[in-house]
Each structure stands twice: as structure tokens, then as C-alpha cells.
Length: 203
Image (cartoon, rainbow, N blue to C red; front, side, top):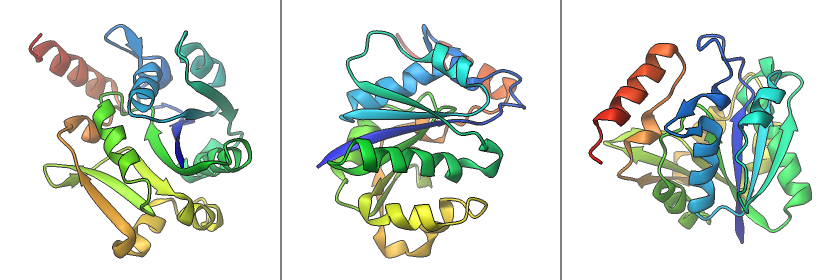
């Protein structure tokens, strides 16, 4: 069984003022950081879902990676993240038939470690696996094939969180030593904080 990666990058980035996929964190774009973590964590293929800023997302894609990357368009991103996830799931079912799970990552979580992706991929036999750091849940999240149809059947406005909360018994919590799962960059202030934290890290 393989695990596919999904990156949701269809948000309007209104609070940031510019598409977050193309923001630079170190020498790479946010999107490149997320895809690099998925690749190094053992994901075989990646599906990126963009919205109106599809050109900016395409420009932020990494160059020279060996991983297969598909860029899809959500023409109604205002319907919410689940609408983008559904687009990705339909593609994975059709184009990556051996995938037994997906790791759903968010483009505005660029500090996630590859080890977190690997830990989730190792839990690929679970219906849902969620990473935790210091007792708090974060992203990315693994969805096994067992819940794909449930996600597809859930109304967009309800969101994927409803599927996660529907049955606590099928959710595996995966403790990781990765504060990046909690780092959500939505505003310029968030971005400045991320860069400041990076500058303080020991080299």
C-alpha cells in the first residue's frame, strides 16, 4: 500500500495579502517546503489543489524533484477546504489506485518535519491519524481509504473535521517532536514570527 500526499493551496490568502504558496521560508517557497517534507517522509505522489491563484501556485512548485506532482484547480474554493480535498481524493482514486491513504497537508504549515510525515505514513493502516505535539493536535492529517467515501459524501460546509470527530475510536493520535504541526501562517504577523523563530534556531 502506498501513501499519497495532498497539499491544499486554494485559499484566497486575504489576510496575508499575497498567495501563501509563494512565500519564501529560508531559500524555498512554502509550497516547496511542504512538498519536500512529504517526499522525505515517504509519500510517493503529491496532488496540489489551487484556487484562483493557480498561476502563483504553479510558479511556487519545486523544480527538479523526482516525486510526481499533479496540480489541480478548484473553481469554487469559497466552498471550503473540504471541497479541495474532494478534488484531490477523486484524482487519487483514479490516478493512484494503489494508494491506501493520503496525508493531507496545508500550504500555510511550512515548518512541518519530514519525520512527522513518516510517522503518519507508518500509521497508514489507520482510518485517521492525527499528529500531536505537547498534547495539541495539528497538521498534516492522514486519511485512510476506509473514510474516503465518507469525506466525499460530507457536505462541503460541514468540513473534514466532522468526519474526524464522528468516531473517536478510529482516530489514532501520533505524538511527534515537531512544533511545526501547530505553526499556521495566516497573516503577515504570523510570517514575521516564523522568520524570527527560524533566525533564533541554532545552526
